Structure formats: structure tokens, C-alpha cells
Amino acid sequence: MAVSTIYSTQALNSTHFLTSSPSSSSSSKQVFFYRRQTNRRFNTIITCAAQQTVVIGLAADSGCGKSTFMRRLTSVFGGAAEPPKGGNPDSNTLISDMTTVICLDDYHSLDRTGRKEKGVTALDPRANDFDLMYEQVKALKSGIAVEKPIYNHVTGLLDAPELIQPPKILVIEGLHPMFDERVRDLLDFSIYLDISNEVKFAWKIQRDMAERGHSLESIKASIEARKPDFDAFIDPQKQYADAVIEVLPTQLIPDDNEGKVLRVRLIMKEGVKYFSPVYLFDEGSTISWIPCGRKLTCSYPGIKFNYQPDSYFDNEVSVVEMDGQFDRLDELIYVESHLSNLSTKFYGEVTQQMLKHADFPGSNNGTGLFQTIVGLKIRDLYEQLIANKATAPSEAAKA
Amino acid sequence: MMSTTASHGRVMMLPSPSRALQNQQPLIGSDMFRLKQTEPRGSRLVVAATAKYKGTKMREEKLSEMIVEKVKEATEVCEADVRSEGCKVAWDEVEEVSQARADLRIKLKLLNQDPLESFCQENPETDECRIYED
Figure 1 (spheres, rainbow over the protein chains, first blue to last red):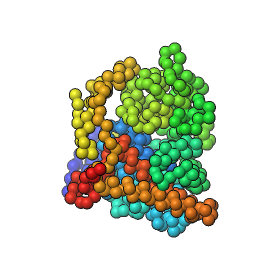
Figure 2 (cartoon, one colour; figure 1 turned 60 degrees about the horizontal axis):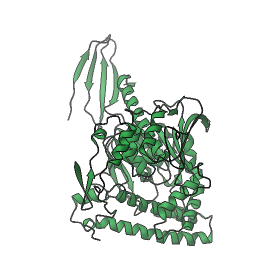
Figure 3 (cartoon, rainbow over the protein chains, first blue to last red; figure 1 turned 135 degrees about the horizontal axis):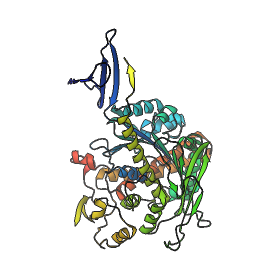
Figure 4 (cartoon, rainbow over the protein chains, first blue to last red; figure 1 turned 90 degrees about the vertical axis):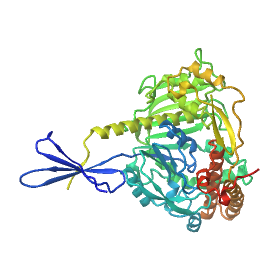
């Protein structure tokens, strides 16, 4: 189907004719500028994607079942994220109106048997095809659909690929979103979820103790056996992240090892385009804040906030930290009303988002709070990026 | 006003979100607190978090069995040499399968989604899509 429309413009010195070419790729339109000159013909081809895909990277060591973070994130944009309809039921992909979430395990170059033969864990870069990851993320970012492989976590095999259409927002989540430099350069924003060893242990106990195969020893052994590869390949990515969510044991209860009350730090890089870090009271200063007192009554162990500028792997950062738990809604709204630069569209939006997912783990502490805030920040970044692309001149390439 | 959602063959009655939330109007702290308190008791039917389709039940059981197998395997391999490649790969497999098992549990319990739902809408006659009876 060839559709061409010719426009002429008088706005510029010479006469320009615009034609839209038939779109060969799914969603990009090409606009040709022809400048009629007496001496030579001068063609300028300008490609404007009808839709610009914003790419977000999320790194963490808990498979692609970061369901709760992903659900909070996609929920900020509206709509629930669901697996692709009618496809492979073991697909790891999630799709909502605005976002598509891809699990980077799909780029394993070795399946479970292959990894066993070669003696590499899934954490090892040798088990992953970074060339394919780069090609496909690049294609999706440019508005081109891809046939992406599926790694089946149940069978441990690589299944037949599924077609992924370029979304408005592409989230790549997994162990290595920031490992390869080329992929890193494609990311508009990146997040690293940094769980401390004690909390990881507590969470895995909660996760696995109900399974008859597991015991405290097996859970501990599994974490320790994976630690060398984790420290070598996954952990170093956090220096590249625009935001790090660090989860640590609480300091409010001495010797707490249940991992139920958490101290969560949101470490935000300064100077990132379209991203303005959240702050408390006075940007750039150091604040220690306990909201519980005369106006707000909190139950044990209470809530404590900190805010300060800092340095993280040679980067200037701002850190907002929450230790403790929300017990009641009014605590949450009180805290929200004192934080600044939240990128909310109305007063109470953070609280409303938290309420929406009140049954998700982390809803009463910093993990849920900061995940929600990061979601709002990403929305803000997305809107700014889109607004900017609409007004700025597109890149021109001489024919 | 109640909205009904069919889930796992059993109807779940949920109070619909308040008008304020639906219209995205700004909420004041005390309003929301009152909201939570006025949720009528007994209007939520608790639905057991079990698989709806036979295929999902089979996956659940398979994953649980695999955990037992792979923990045993890892323990044996590591007894020989705890620093060997074989040992860390074995525990990595345990982690992979444990996470897959947990993901399935989260999907069923927290999100009330049977992963086979959409597949079974299209292919109701397959063995995998037989409704699982307790």
C-alpha cells in the first residue's frame, strides 16, 4: 500500500516539498524534504518515528517475578500489565496499554542443560546473548517489531520466539540490563534494586520455607554459592544506575533479623536529563526527620526519614531514606505532603497508588513508597521526553 | 454498588472503588482513613489461591518436585567440592526453580490470574485446560 502526500511550504526560503513515504516498517514514517535548487537537487531525508519508545532498565536478582515493582510501575501509567494473550503460556513478557515489560532471561544463549554442560550460572555473561539483546532493544526503540526468544523457566528450554510490537514504554528487567555498554546507552532511565544480604536471606526464607524441598541450610547454601558470580557480574552494574533502591535491615529495632521492618534508601543520581531527585524540605541540605510526634501518632517502631546529598561511585547523588513502617493511611499522606519533587499530578497521588496495591508486599514501608515514587518519576521523564521530541527538529541525514 | 469478577470459577464480590478514587480527585488524609474504615465487612469473599486449570496445577507440582530433586542434587555435588563449578551451577538451578515456583504462587494468590487463562480461552478442549477439581 503506497500512500504519498505532497505538501508545499512557503515558510522557508526555497520551496520544499514534503512527501510521506509508504511505511515499510511498522510505525515509522519517513518524511522527505526536497529543496528545489537551480544548481543541484538536494534531498534531505528526515525520519520521524510516529512513536518514540522510551526504554527503562531494571536490574535485580529475583528472576522476572519482580511482579510487584512492575505492577506498581505499569499501574502509574494506568491499566494492568498482563501476559500476551493467546501466546506461549510460559511467556515472561507483560503488556499493558503503554508499557511492555521484557524479561532479559529470554536472551539466555544457553538453556539449563547448556549451562550445566559449560559450568556457568545464569548470572554469568557467557550464558547470555548480548548482541541479540542490543539488536532487539535498539529495534524496538526505533519502532520496529521483533521476534524475541522465550526462555521457559519451567522446562529450562528456549521456546519458539514471540512477536513484540514496539510499545510507548519498554522496560527491560533482569540480571544484566546495564551490563553491556551498547544496551546501557539505549536506556533512558535505569534502576538497580540492591537488596542487602541479611534482607535477601530473610526474604528467601519467607519465599522458600513452605516448599518441602527447602530448609534453612539449603536456602543459605544457595545464596552463598551464587554470591561470587553475583558480586562479579551483577553488583557492579549499580554504579551505572540513575536510581538505586537499597534495602537494608532496620536500625530502629536492635538485633532485628526478621527482615520485616526495613530501612530503604533511594539513591538518585544528579544531573540526569528529565529526572529531578525527590527531596525533603530543603534541596541539597541534610535533614533528619521523625514525623511522629504531636501531629502524628505512630505505632512501634515508628518512622524515620533522612535526606542528604552524597557521593556514590564517583557520582553526585541525593539520598532519601525511610526506616520503619506505615501503620495507617494518615501516616502515609502526612509523609507524602512533606516530600518535594514527587512528580505527582495531584496531591495524594502517591498515597492513592500505594492504596491501590495495599496487599502487595512492601506496601507499608520504603520499598513500596520508593517504587511508587520511581514510577511517577518515570512517567514524568516519559512526558518530558515526548514533549521535547515533538517540538525539537528531528535529526536530518543528508541523502 | 458491587462489581463482580469471575475468578477461578467462583464469583468474587468486591466493593467498587469510591467515586473519589475513580475521579482522581485530591484526597485528604482523614477522608481516606474513613474510606478504609467504611469498607463493609463481609463484602469480600476470600477466594482460595489455587490453580483453576489442570495445566497450572501440573506446573505447580512439577516445580515443587524439581525443587526437592535439585536441592538433593546440589547437596551431593557440593559435598564433593563446594568450590566447583558444578556446585554453584547446581545451586543456581535450585534458585531458578524456587523463583519460578514462587512467581506462580504470586500470580495465583496476589493477582488472581491463572497463567493459562488466555491460552485456555482459545483452546478449552485440551487436557491442560480441564478445570481442576479439588
